[in-house]
Image (cartoon, rainbow, N blue to C red; front, top):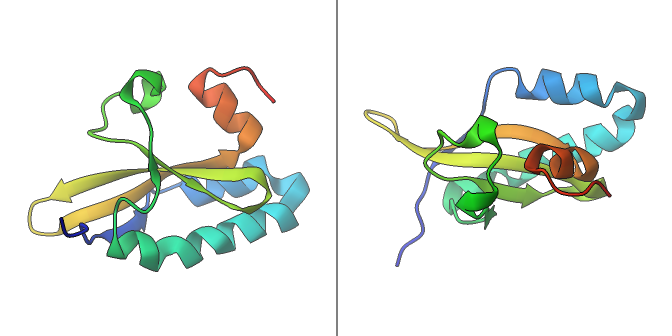
Length: 113
């Protein structure tokens, strides 16, 4: 089976929200952001580059998505993305959220680390 190619995009406001939440630790956040951008070509080449998240574990805010995947980033950060098919544009791998491990655990309802 051939991997699905896609355009990688970041949902509007995700970067600003991420940087605002991590303004006290800007160097670590900037490193995570740079790593996310660097993973863009790999994600565009193969939308299964990240790890799928089991539907039963999706937070309420993401339940309307057709799929949900996770990318591991440096310094304990993670990104959550959705692969969509948009008529006229094709497949889009859209980054919907970025945060640290503790925020991820809170978002998904796990015991915080």
